[in-house]
Amino acid sequence: EFSELFLSTTQRTSTYHAASAAASVGTLVQAIERADSFATDAVADVLASQEFKTLYGLLSFDANGQSQAPSLHLQYDKDLAVQTVYPIEFRSAELVYPMPTWDARDCNVLSRCLTGDEKGVCQEDGSCKCDSEGAISSGVGSSAKCVYIPNEDLTYVDTSLLFVGYILFAIQALLSIACTAWTVYFRNCRIVRASQPLFLCLIACGTFMMSLSIIPVGIQGGYRYLFDPITGMQTDEPNTEIRSVDAACMALPWLFSMGFAVTFSALFAKILRIKLVFQASRNFVRKQVGVKDVALIMVAVIALQAIVLIAWNVADPLVWRREVLMEDNNGYPTKSIGTCSSNNGLAFLIPLIVIDALMLFYALYLCFVTRKVSAEYQEGTWITASILSILQILVLSIPILVIVDNDNSAFYFVRVAVIFLVSTTVTMLIFFPKIYKLHFMKTQQGRAKRIGFRANPGQVSSTDPYESRLRSSMNSDREKRLSIGSDEGITSSVVRKVAFEVDAAIANSQEEEENEIVSATEKKTEIDKCADDEV
Image (cartoon, rainbow, N blue to C red; front, side, top):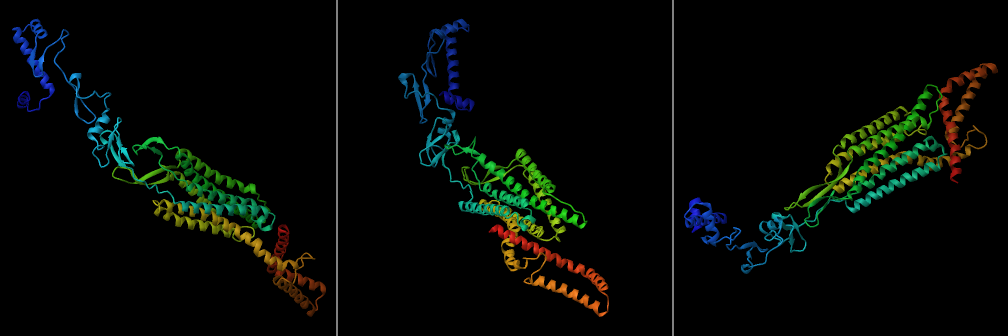
């Protein structure tokens, strides 16, 4: 009756608050009527000594003024059923204590833990304990549910490709070590001495450092932060294993850049040394250019590279980051890719490229200037071939790297191939021509010509066709000069004078051929020496 009256009057459903207020007002009205007075003391005496009929039943008060009306204490149980827990004689269930957390209550009432495709039981912390094997709890409170975490494709580089990369590194490492050992062993041979053994060793060392950068390219990792095994969500706890991956990220530019700097600064210093000597000889000035005179060039180039790399390492180093490419309906990643990146990496990469490019182009210019120097004393042709080959490799590899950026395996293989080709090309073009010239070409020629250089210094053996032809030409010229003198009746002194003038006239044409004979004599002597060393 009260509820209907309250609804018709207020247009709202009644609550126990409204019922309590109506009971209080009804009790006061009854007390005033019985006291027949509005006096406070009279009304209070009636309230303290009598009982009153209300919506809650008979109402009376004790000596302390507290209501003595019976009150039932209700509570929701774990099955969301309403139970009376007090008074004890009227209780229908035991008191639940302690009370569940609000997350646990929301899980029971609002979440899909009990009603989803994969059901479970709400826990005290508001998570869902799943019944199905393999399912885990996702979320807490109202968002708690049981889900399956999909197997994520981390797009790691295939193991077979990693193995290929290690093989390529091993090949270049063996080449560099073998070339260094060859240079040291044959350092007293003319070909090796003319190529400056110190610079050859530095070139081999630089190519080894470049090839060593293949190792960090293959180091990979997961996420920077760990995942909660219960919820499958990423936490704020750092993954300590990523530190080694971060170190590998920054090791790549260090090894390749410093190896490149050592290799080409050695080539640059070597060709610069030849240029200085060649320029002095053209000015008829005797000048000795030692290693120390060009070593500063190498130190300057390497120092510039090191300064840029140190600044990069301190200000904004490369770190390992994993980017999620695909997710399932529950927000769990199904595919991701990891890369080394920094916020402002180009600000440091561009100066490194500019330094290397300037060094390469100036080395090409020096090769052009010294192109007329005997190939025995410089490798301008091979240095030029090395630089042009590297430029071709880089021009072809850059667009390929852009195309395969999201394919981790292809991206790895292209980078490894570029590193291997750059280092191997330099090694083969600088060392292999010298090895062939010393051990194959010279050995074959030396055996055929060695007999012609025995007893008398300066005497050319007739076993050498070229040298026999030159000697016959010189004898024929002298016979013609003597014949001219005798036919005209000129005295012996005049004949000698005419012969001297003729000799002077053809000196320029014979000088080059005579120099070749001397050079051939020195080469044969060197062949004997290197052959004796090998024995």
